[in-house]
Length: 119
Image (cartoon, rainbow, N blue to C red; front, side, top):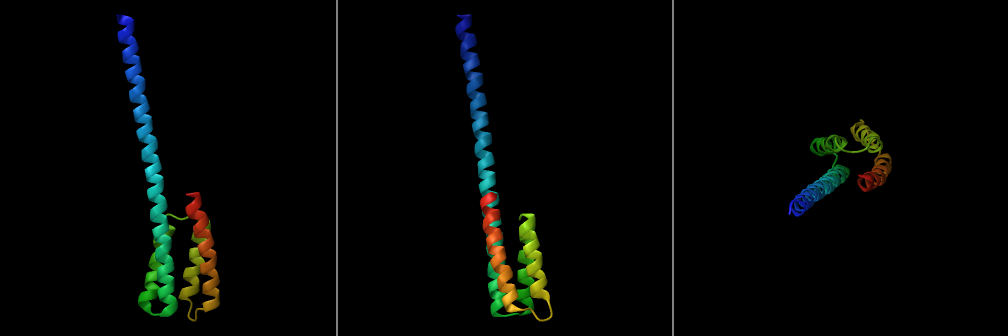
């Protein structure tokens, strides 16, 4: 009788440990997916802001692209951060060069893909 009781207790403890581990793994996976989603949205904000800036180079659009770049730098990789810094510099020059900005955005797109995939 005691053996059955001890066996039931041990089985229950292992079941609870299994449930706890499963919950932790699910939580970690959800957190990682949420972080990936947020990073993707931040990159999308940069591309939208750049598109608006390319159409109309006014102060509001300039502020939006700088803001989007700074926000994205909070979560992105070092490589992407360097590209974002380059983009910020390119758009804030007295006379931005459209071809240069376009090439930087192409680099950023590739870096963003890599960043989101590896997150």
